[in-house]
Image (tube, rainbow over all chains, first blue to last red; front, side, top):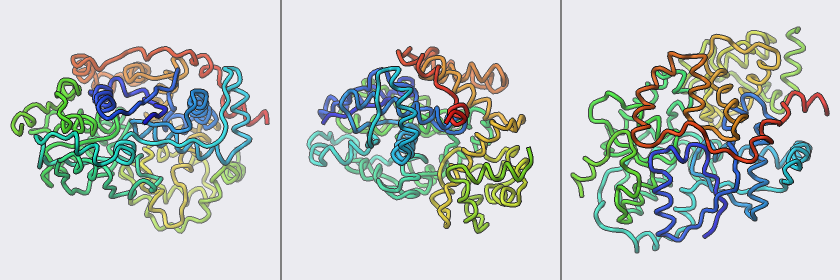
Length: 282
Length: 181
């Protein structure tokens, strides 16, 4: 299994995301080929400031992927995922904008044409890796470990094709496949405040604590996320509260289920430590 | 500029006319996670635009509070792309020099785009540094967090340089592109 890979700007500093994705790829035979010289996707900031630049930034990514022979791009971040999909949608119905952007791209000897398929790494792990392959590789140690899945906003919305837009279950199903016990809760796609948490920390803190309270009430012992920004907000947003809930990436949980050591998965990089909970169970 | 003219400009953007379908049900405002902070929720904002109160709409903080969570978009019974309209209002407020000065998100976005313009990529630390010059209190509040990240080897100040950074930096502004076509 080989895919064009767009890691996004937050991937390296995200708590053990890269380590755990690499570890899973090695074990499951997935080849994520990093798009060479990739740039920032522009996120919601560029759509808010300048649409042409927003589209040009993403078009460059598509052009780079195309030059490397990829029409399918895998991302590990919700914001990158929706930004790329959104741009792809706009570009594919605006040939004039595409040709104007291609004028710009030609300065770098790049060309972007046609449609691109943008996919989240969760989609790859759940839909492309056969279920048996997971069950063959699982260790028994994490059975019945209560996990609350947090999807964030920009994975199922506004698309609704991969799963339900407000109450998705794909991550719950994946986590269950790994032997964990997903807990039912209603905060799956409640907004964490995203980058607004920098400027409006107090106000977004309320959004974060609403998620944490709901998970706690439903018996979740860890919250797992699929996006660096969601992870950071939920992890850092619990500062000062009693019995904070650890927030590992879904790939870190998958790694644990596959029997990979916590240190190889970068679990020591989480702000809310997970060791205590792990050692109690293991 | 007179408000009628601004209203027409708005209606002639990609999704502008879609607000004519708004039935003022308030599902958007009720679904918004930050509606409590807004002087007018999205429903009221659309009413202002339809009434021609363009200056009030363009100077409104509402679009800048929008976090693009798409909750309103997927629930709108009239299938109005609320977020795209918010993007459009933000861009128009920049073009006509009506960005609300009291709001901090325009500065955050500028800090973000500055980092992209210089490096082609961002690092969280660089965005914070660009932003912190304008809002030292917010930056100061994050110092202890920065130390925590540093301890865990998670803090990179400079994003990796990319070859395409010059290309990114020379991209013409959308406004200029539009005027030349």
